[in-house]
Image (cartoon, rainbow, N blue to C red; front, side, top):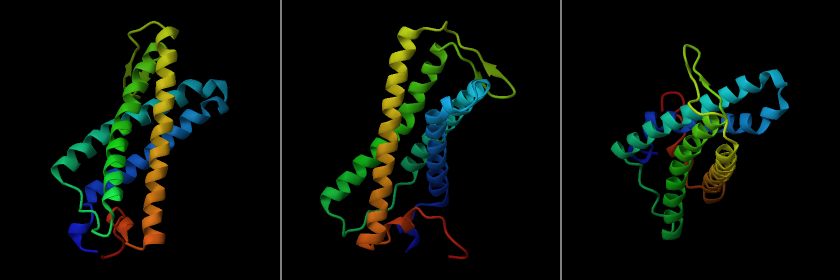
Length: 179
C-alpha cells in the first residue's frame, strides 16, 4: 500500500489510543458495581479521567484530521458505502466528544470531585438527583451508541479485510518492521 493511501503515524497512534481508552472507560462504567464498595470512588474517578483523556485526544485527533485529510477511499467502494463510511466517522467523532462532555456534569451534579493526583477539582454543585439522573441516562445512551457505532466500524473493517479483500485495514494498521 502506498504511503498516501495510509493514515500517518500520528493519526494511527491517536486512533488506537482512543479506541483502547473508550473500551477501558466503557468497561469501568459497566463494572463499577462489581468492585468492592471501598473502591467505588477510585473506580468512578478512573472512569472519569479515562473519559476526559478520550475527550482531549478526540479534539487533538479532530484538529489533526482537519489539517491532514484522510486518504481517499478505494474507488471500488460504492457511493452508498462511501457515504456510510463518512457518516459513520462523523458519528464516531461526535460521540467521542459528546459522551465525556455529558459525563463531566453528571459526575459534578452527583457532588463528586475529580482527583487528578496532584490536585482535585471539587464539585461546585450540591448533589442534585433531578439533574444527574437524566444526565446519567443521556451519558449511558450515548455510551452505548458509541460502542455500537464502534462495533459497526470494526465489523465494516473486518468485512473489507476478509470478504472484500481490499486491504482497507492496512490504512490504519501500525507499520511492522521496516515497511
